[in-house]
Amino acid sequence: MAFEMRAAFAICLALFSLRSVMVMGEGGVECEKLPVEMCAFSVSSSGARCVLEKKYTFVPSTHESSVEYQCQSSGVMAEKMMEWIESEECLQSCGLQRMSVGMSTDDLSAYSDFTSKLCSDKCQNSCPNIVNLYLNLAAGEGIYLPHLCEAHKTRSRRMMFETVASGPAAQTISLAGVAAAPL
Image (cartoon, rainbow, N blue to C red; front, side, top):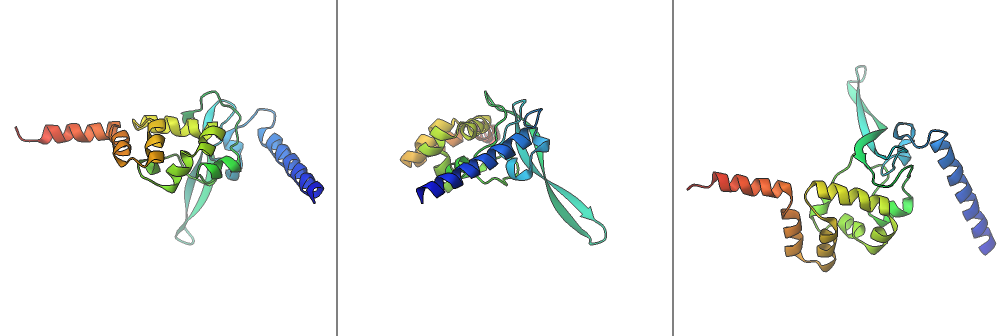
């Protein structure tokens, strides 16, 4: 039984390696050449993050739109990572799905299952690509991910509110509120 499991694992590993070589080819990883099932959370040879996008096409004969997925290079560059196709284990550990369209920090501002998994020790310690992506996405919103994770782990609503409320969007709102207040 143990031998059969090892043999099955070896075969799976060999098939994955072969597919990785086929995807990378001679020129390395190109987002536009990745199958859509491998696109999201991957990094090209140039360091550009790959992003899954939806393309809608209107079909005149049926008066409906068809949806097609495409893998595109984003303007977001990965730090110190190239030619990276994220593992299914990391996607599960960090609460992500392979067929995720676009990149978003929307779920970071709430106590959610996603935030729990993203802040989990397993994700933080084993999935540097995903952690780096969300660290930078959160920073773009004025949120420091380690503080957010600390607040999430300790369930400190005040600390979480202060972390999220300190972002540029919150500062804009508070400044607009001050400007609009009567003198």
